[in-house]
Image 1 (cartoon, rainbow, N blue to C red):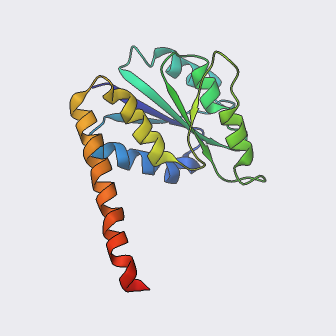
Image 2: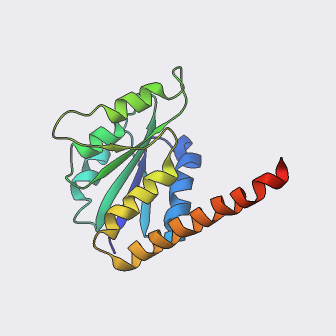
Length: 162
């Protein structure tokens, strides 16, 4: 199975990224986590993206706040799928990160999840890998069924709470 690369612009993004690593661990998907900044370590971020395919990665996730150029910088240097996680914080409480991540020029796509949406980024990355991995696809199907069962259980008990 291909690995998922998770890059965060700062280690302050780790509490958000942890939700992605927890999800990938639950699904049994291998991953690596790195701290590279689009602005402070642009050469290292570029080198990681350029060599990601040869290093066994199938999808990359980039988490960054504020100007949030990381996902775009990574996507500019690979044709692997890139998923951006805009992180809340700063003067605009994440709106700037969201806009920076979602507004990519034609030819450099970045899939974007919600602010702090690391769990969904991990699920989307796993779904991309599951196109070619039946075992992973089954794990994702089973997770969906389990999630639905939890909601239905809550529905069955809601009348008792009213």
